[in-house]
Image (cartoon, rainbow, N blue to C red; front, side, top):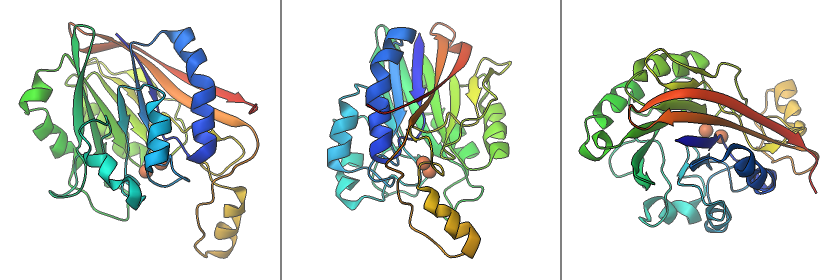
Length: 264
Ligand SMILES: [Fe+2]
Ligand SMILES: [Fe+2]
């Protein structure tokens, strides 16, 4: 079974990039299932009802997110809507809107998708994601899945790689999101887990992780600046294609996809 998995969609350029590239990527790779991280889909921060509708038109089986999942207040009900296949990191306290995993069927196979957030270099302090994974893998509906996939939303590549080893052999795939920069370390770990530290973003190619280059000022002055989405210039799309043998639940291949193109 083949999964096509995208990292963070950043604002309108990110939405335009996915809408432009997805049909051709579906044609090229023939994925059985598509998963997309949409934590930055609304103006670079959170998920709004209108941008969720746009994302649903992509017909992904699961939409993952991260620390920005709750930023758009109008979008909060989306996180708890049982009809929308949207998840947020599982390792947040009880009572926080949303759910940390979902399951779906693809053909004859059951798939579970888990979202977890790292702890290193975040301003908040979610539960330890390593222990959280151990607990999630004990849950009945996740145990029954033929394939378990994890969006690990983290800043530090060291934490992501350690998490990959922690998960190796117990899940089909772990891909990083959050940094918006694709890493060149896609590999199938020895236990059979397809892994990459960060899949990378969908958004403006001439940008600072999707934001306007005006953000340079923030580094020159040490003053905080708003994350203004870069609206102009070429687009980039970053994803991974992961092949999994559904009988064993083990990944057999992972390949990176990166496309840079002018917008129409
Ligand atoms: Fe992000
Ligand atoms: Fe994030």
